[in-house]
Length: 319
Image (cartoon, rainbow, N blue to C red; front, side):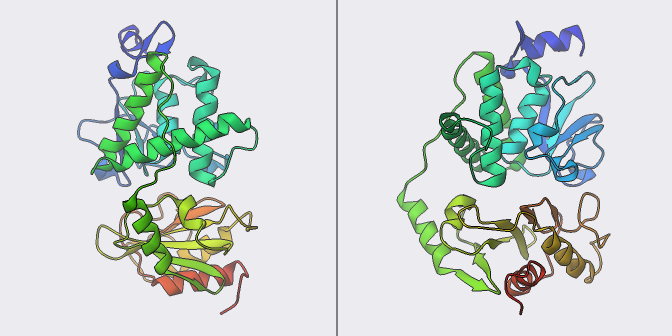
């Protein structure tokens, strides 16, 4: 990092978020990378064209912060991108922009790690104290609300990252949010419950036109070990998130279901490029306890077909 950039990013060893010159963006295709950005890092997802990528979906760490080195040389990086703006991605962008965990207070890193674990695993981090995990959950809720507050994913991602960097630079507490309770929230939960059914041992919840709900809230509605959540892709067809239910006994690895669905999607032909899930395949992808349908097009699979394939692949209940 140059002396000029170092002075613009840090002050007395701390990140100065309001003066951080880097851009933060969301992209799933090379064509989505902002104009003028030629050298960038990718976190919590593999953005095509990144100069360096830290993606725990590929490398297997518990949360993406665990995939980052403690010290990060950021000289020449013009931006930080991700494929999906969530708390884990935001936390990773904060740490990368800071030059690594070594430049952040220990409690801040622990809170970010706890918040990331709540985001990815829907439960407390097993290695952190209960009170810190309670605060980490509130940080996660704040980030989730901040991301939803912007119509554009990149704007929400940048706003959340910069707000956390600003708090750190001024020694202010990280922002937190108690569990939201509102009439609108309760109405959305009610609609989701009405659309829930169990298919081959899998909870299938059609959330098209329901509105945003936290996955933990959705999993509290059922007792199945795995759920398929159905959303509306921007192209109009379905997109899916498949994840384990943290409130009941569940499989430790739902990878067999991911591979089965990737094979079914690939059978429909292009835009899927590979029968194997993962970055560059234009197919399904994810990790051991949660995964989703392709980013860049609506899935060709129907909801009951997806739930049936998941149940069969995991041996929950054979069709």
